Image 1 (cartoon, one colour):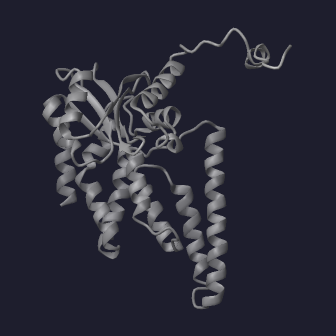
Image 2 (tube, rainbow, N blue to C red):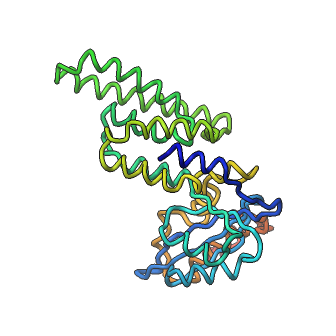
Image 3 (cartoon, rainbow, N blue to C red):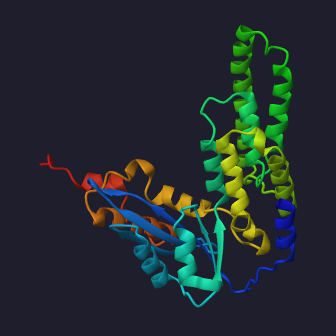
Length: 304
């Protein structure tokens, strides 16, 4: 089935316009007191500037459609990155029709994969998790490290006491190794490297060969990836196209932090916080003529 699918896909061509508009779409759910609000956001993928950022009382399909129609030209080709909300394909197709190129966020997929595994994994489970994460991102270093640990495990697996002690030590070593890789990327200002389309296909095929040996949860995740393969790989066909919604997640974290999302009493408070961030991004905030200390000195109620 997979071979037939890939053969058909190789014969398909995806028509792209040089002037295609690349955007990120996401939602955030701040609270006004006890009332749930819904923040819908569009970000330009090339300029990283905000196209629209509005608050609503609901996030029904009609609300999303109205928001998209108002802020995007439905007559022009659009490349849009979203998460896996099941409503999005129908909503986007209705608005943009054949002009739509819909990319699913790969980092959101990674979060779903991680959530498929228990918090305290065995070395075997951790290895399988990283093989799934390795479909689209290069996690070969982590896989090699875990494979070496798995070989060591054979020496202690028959002794329960030694095995428990070894497992704690092995997990600690792996976490340290993983943090080291992350710090190295951060120092070099590098992102997690993406695999080529050919490499991603190869890694996925290897997992599918053994799909019947995995738990039902992992089988479902692999079939889900198989079903949405085209929408997970469209970024490969358009130079400069984004594969994730990381820019909009970063924008959210700076404009309305997670620990602040429940602290607002009015819509205005949320809107002003969002507006301040937009002004900061556009360098529209000017420094005051006097410093805070100078202003404080002007206010001295006890001065005679």
